[in-house]
Image (cartoon, rainbow, N blue to C red):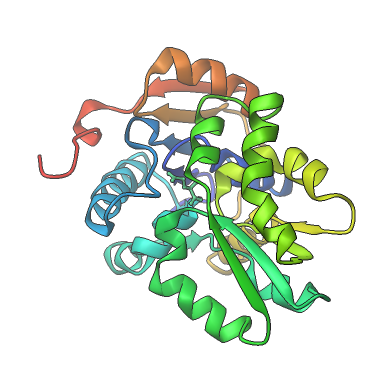
Length: 272
Ligand code: DGL
């Protein structure tokens, strides 16, 4: 595998672009490929089999496109299928998960809040994270499917975003959480709204940066870090409506990129 090969990343939709932005800032010379599975989003209330089917198809596509490493930029997919992907591919696979450990160590009130999808919060992986790293604190979990839907529509500020965030965050404030984990990559794009609602005394954690650092470490260990300045634009594919994706991705991804529909062979729903 060449150091010039691209890094591939994916999410159920546009949320993982938040992780990709941290990768772009940390490693400006890497060429990035990204699949937004917006035609099949949200994953948050789907079965493990559904998420496994979609993530497997996208991983095949990215590996076929020459990716030297894969970033699972979706907490829900990590919780459901990261070990399956690691069993199937031999390239470095970096997966994101909610920042429960740093939140538990940072909390002074002894209560942390986690905003994530229902699938993530019900997963064994999440239960394992809590029992390994947060057994001494109270963890208040709040599933927020409507926040995913807002970001997929490109709504990241304004009255609708504020009202929806307020509704989800209210319970965390009532329980006196002083640290809130954004446990879904879509929520990064609502971070400013969450911070405005919770105020300065509540810390908001978002794990994109540690994922980017882990990717850099893994590429360096495998002697795969790009050695030359990047010359090609990033490439993004969507399984959703291309016109809608163009408008939303144009706002969320400010770097030069080419956007194309994900080829039909990789857009088959589970069971076909
Ligand atoms: N962005 C995804 C995550 O990090 C999930 C959104 C969805 O429900 O599809 O969990």
